[in-house]
Image 1: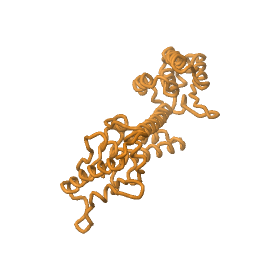
Image 2: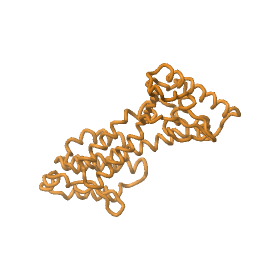
Image 3: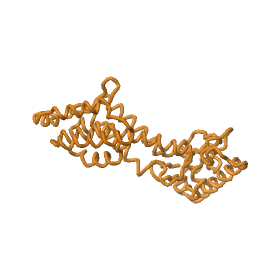
Length: 288
């Protein structure tokens, strides 16, 4: 089974799609797919479908959705290309979508799951960052982010559970993006990052670290005035929308850019190690 959730939901068994078009069975499959090879409790599925107000027939209705999914799986097993050897026992729909005490399990049968691959690549990229291998980290994190084709579950109408999982996955994507940009800054790729950071700063209008990275890239590209403008726009947004001032780390970056002379611009862009994002006392600090 091949499962994609980092974008539109796509679940294929034996090479054929088993993704239903009806919204409720689609929700059930989405939650099972995200937790493939793990038991998803009936209570979690009911919470997803009916948000704390289940009908009296909730369990029976859920069983109906499971039967509908098994019908799609059975069709895929019957008509798709044979995946097992001639002597291997044939998988049935009940082997793929398993009923277990307390819940259901979607068996991937050793297939692919894009969110698992993302976690693997991102985790390896983080370890490369910690080891100072910025080129390796940038490559691994770029590969991880390339698995995303849009927001997670982009074409699924989510309930409580899926909305929570979508927010969690988006946070993991932003963390990987932040670290990939930091790796690129450490490699001196500030000019290459400007177009991307322009879009990201507009999309994530209160994300301080992305704005700090944008300021740093602009400053290192000789565009100090624009870097300071980014700070002022962010500050205005934070004060107006959240009633907050920028963090100490971001204010420190602004002061560093204000005090920097022309000679520091050439120095800042001279090597991979300069102008990088670092940790200091538990704060995110972007050094000029």
